[in-house]
Image 1 (cartoon, protein in one colour):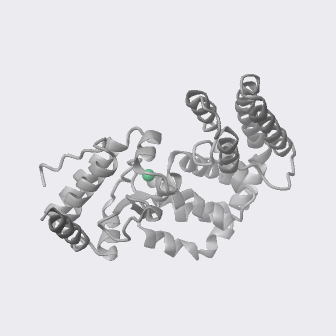
Image 2 (cartoon, protein in one colour):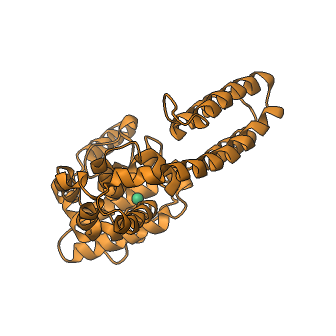
Image 3 (tube, protein in one colour):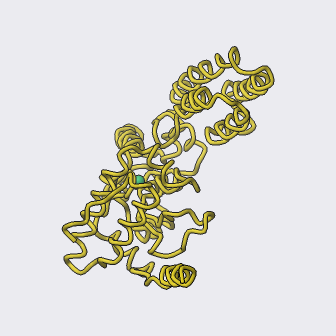
Length: 315
Ligand SMILES: [Zn+2]
C-alpha cells in the first residue's frame, strides 16, 4: 500500500505541468525585473544580441558611449564607473577607441591591482608557518609561481583569480582544521575580480578589442535562466526549475548548490522577495502565471532549507 502511494507521488511530480514556456519566461525580462540574487535590474537578452553585431563599437569611444548611454542605469557598479571614466576621457581624446583609452590607464591600474593582490598573498603566505610541512611546501610553490606572474609586466599567461583559488583549495583539501582552511580561502576570495574592482576590470579588458569592452560593460546585466537545482545534480531544464538571474550572478554560482550562493550573497533572500513582488504585480496584469510563482516559492524554500521563504500572500 505504502509503495503504491510513493509511486503515485513520484508520478505526479514528474507530470507537474510546466508553468511557463521559455519564451514566456524570457518575456518577463521586458518589465524591468530585478535579479533574484543581487537585485539589479536585468537587460533583455535580445537587446544584448542586437548589440553584438554593432560595428560602431570599434570606432571612437564617443560613438560607443552614445549607443550605451540608455543602458547606463542597469550597469553593475564597476562597469558604470568604467563607463563614466570613458565619458570623461572621451572629451579629452575624442578620436580614441575604448581599447586605446583603457591602454592609457592600464599601467596605473595594474600597479594598483598588484598592490592589492600582493597584500593578500602576503597574508596567505603567513599560514606556511602553521600549516603541516607538506601543505606548506605546496603553498610555497604556488605562491612563487603566482608572484612570478604578477610581477612580470608581460606574463606568458595572465593571473587568474579563479584558477588560483581552485589550486589553493586543492592544496588545503587534506587539512583537518576546517576553520583554518576556511580562514585562508576567505582571504583568497578577497582577491579583486574585474566585476568588483575598477583596476581589475581595466587590466583584464585592456587586452580586449573595443567591441568586446563595450559589450562587457552591459554583459553582467543580461537576464538568464538560472537552474535552481543545478543541471549536473539532475535539475530539470524548464521553468519548474528556472529562476531569472543576471549573467553575473548566474556565472558566479557555477554549479554550486543554492545554499552556497546564499552564503556568498547574504541579501539574496530579500532580493528574491523583491523579484517575487514584481512577478506578483505582473501576474495581476496577466503577464505572468500564478503557478510559476507558487512553484518558485516552494522550490526556493526546499532547496535553501527554508532560508528563502518568500511571502506570496498577495498572489
Ligand atoms: Zn544578479
